Amino acid sequence: MTDKKIYLLILFIIVSITFNVNAENYGGNLKIKMNKRPLTLNPIFSANQTEKKINKQIFDKLLILNSQGELSNNLTEFWESNAESTVFKFKLKENVYFHPYKLNGKEIKIEQRKVTAADWKWSFEYLTDPKNKSPYAGIFEKVVGYDDYQKQRANEITGIKVIDDYQLQINLKDSYAPFIYNLAKEAAVVMPKSAALEKNQKFSLNPIGTGPFKFKNFANNRIKLTKNQNYWKKTEQQNKLPYLEQIEYYFDNSKNLNKNYQEFDLYQLSYDQLINYYHNNQRDENYNLKTIINNNLYFVAFDCRDNDINESEYKVIKHQIRSSLNNDKFNQTIKLNNYIHNENMSDGFNFLNKISAKTEANSENEVNFSDNLKLKMISNNSNLSLQISELLKTELKKFNVKLEVKNYNWNKYLELLKSSSQRDLFMMSYSYENKFEFIADNFYSKSEKNYFNYENRRIDNLIDYIKLTKNMENQNIAYTIMEEILFNENPYLVIFKGVDHFLISENLSNQKILENIYTKDSLELFYFE
Image 1 (cartoon, rainbow, N blue to C red):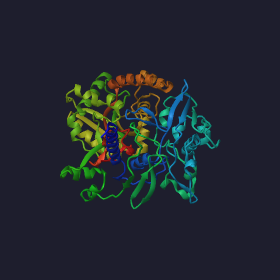
Image 2 (tube, rainbow, N blue to C red):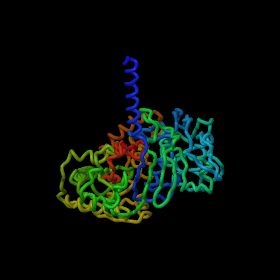
Image 3 (tube, rainbow, N blue to C red):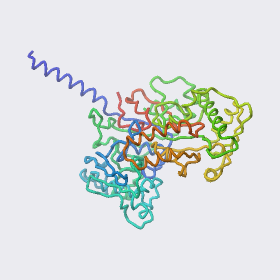
Image 4 (cartoon, rainbow, N blue to C red):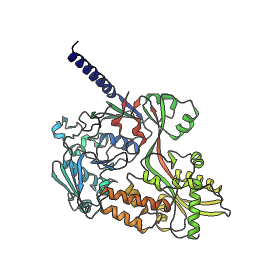
């Protein structure tokens, strides 16, 4: 055999092996069992976690947060802002297409489904249209013309400008660099106007987007999505996405875990199933149990206003109580429905982890207060709040601390948070998608959501600086300084993080995406061995 033939044979073998490996990665039907049933798949209204998870497969945003929580291009080639952070310009990707859909029984041709800047302008105005009453309309409240559009004095938001087919510009009323984070929020997606407004289309139950999977049907407690053959995204190895052929979401409320979980690749466990079955029965070696962090936070915090206790003494008391609660023993004893105590895990909340009480637990041993210390706490009267209240009462009693708790309905509770000073502690819950909102809401002295009544001039100045500077490196320096300040001054007593519990088939590959809060819903990266 000649050298040339040997070379060609080797080349053929290499190509064949590569093709076969890649071919194994494509195809397959991913079956997912979810606890909550979706009510709408229109992203400007979607609220529950199931709706949001499904919509992430159907729709795309201009920008996303990468695995480090940093802004990254998605349907943009690049973006830039002026020095004052009042004008944001976006160069759009050109080969992006809406999923196939029909109007009046006729299929819309692919060339008519190409996404342009006009589609983005319409989508953003549809989101903010006062007639739609979307809870997410405030994403664009800082944009020029938003107020007139909301009050129906204008038929467009003048600050959202179409420069040409693939250039979009957004003008703000004042300097505000963090506005760019709003465009990575779940509701800030692109939709086709003709499909969204077509009455026969019933967009809320038949959504059309640009994402890796397209909606097929919703019937018999099941939503079926199929592969978007025209999806624009590829992996770093230039593999075309998505790998899967289909995703099916099921919403059967059966509590008989043993009966049917083997029928699924991802099976969301209710808390009862987790405790009453899974931990008390032999585990299936073909399934892994994964606890997946989400962006819901539940926390108990100190009020920073003056109280009856001497300030320096109160600072020591807060430090000692935090240290007593934030330890492995406490972490192992709590049992809350779909919430876990703050843990040092790679979950995307790196900033929160650094300033939370967990970080100081290692420097202190448990302490007992010789005199019975009395603390007052207010809370809403949700079941979870009542559970946490009882948990803290019991735990603090071990250290001679008596916790008096008063629970109120939500409206009354918010009134008291804003006006009352008759408390040492309060309880609150939030969902956050980026660290700026978390900091600006909770630690900026002028924030309406700063229920801690925390005030630090340096923190205020750093937040104001981040609002004005577009330089990401300088922003990160400001965040680092704030971490150091808040590490010593933070008002948190304990923090609980929202989690979802899933049984996951070992046949499903690339499960590492579930370990990070920002990539956990990137199902286009899943494939079967």
